[in-house]
Structure formats: C-alpha cells, structure tokens
Image (cartoon, rainbow, N blue to C red):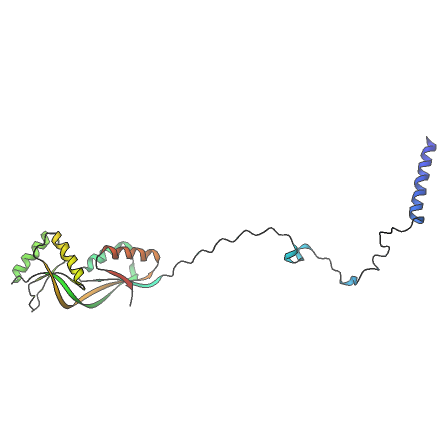
Length: 225
C-alpha cells in the first residue's frame, strides 16, 4: 500500500515537470499578449455610468401624462345692463350674493329709446296718483308719473324700450297682471341708463353673470367699452 502511494506521488511530480518544461506552448494562446497590443496607452477603463445612453440598458420611462390645458385668462371687465333708475335696485339685489366688493362699479349713460308702455294722461296729478295706487294694488312697482310740460303730462310710464318687440312683451306681461288700460307706442326720448361693471372676471363668475342676464329680460352682458 505504501509502495502504491509513492508511485502516485512520483507520477504527479513527473507530470508537473513535463507540463512545465517540456510541453509546447498552447497553440490557441498568445505568449506575448502585452507586446501585441495596438496603442495600449489609449486604452481606458470606464464605468457603466460613463457609457453612452444608447448602450446602457434602461427601463423604458412611463409615458408622460397629457398636459393640462391652461385655464382661460380672466376677462378684464364685463358690464351688465342697461337698467333704468327704476330697475337698478332689482339688478343690485341680484348682484349681492356674488359679494363683488371693490370689483363692482357703475357706469351711467343716456340712451335714446323709441318705444314705451304707458297709461295715457290722466288729466291731473290727483288722478295720476290714483292710477298709481291701482298699480300698487296689483303689485306693480316699475312705473313713474310723467310730470314734464308735454303732451304726455300725467301719463303713467310703465317702461321704455329700444324695440317694439320688447315693448309688446312688457305690455303682454302687464295685461297678465290685470292692467287693462296700458298701451305701447313710439316715443323718442333720452333716458338715463345704468350699467354695472365687474372687473377680473374668471370663468365661474362669467357663468354666474350670464345666468343673471338671462333672468332679467332685456338686459345684456358684454365687455366694458
């Protein structure tokens, strides 16, 4: 057994000596790798972070969300009108819930109107006041007694309008309330009108103002002059 062990040791030593000193160089290897390099001074070891973006495997980025459309820019100024002096308090009441504060202002103008709804002259101030009391009993508040020195003195005006259609609509509404002696007719006269101007109007406020304009017949909403 000991003899077999010594024979294995001698065989290993002989094989090592043969491979180290007697065997031919590996035909597939290069015995002089450093000498065969081309311009070795230009070689540079770089990290993956220095590789061009196209050569580094990256996880594809998720698609960008679509851009949010910008909110419409506020309108510098809108005005709502126009209203007679008698109608103005009703418009102011409608604007109160908006709490506009310093953003609300008034513009006064004179407009030439061509039509009006009226009760013909009553002949005296007393009779005109009596007719006004009848209107109050019918819950009609938008009227005034004409007192100037004209053919219409002591008539009761129930509204002035820029078109015959608007005057006829007012007349039909009054008759529905029980006013039987009113009529519509032409009348060219200058009437004081009031416009309510609102500044820095964003989209929600513009929508609310348009709703108000739709609720009061004959009014309009437009940009300030």
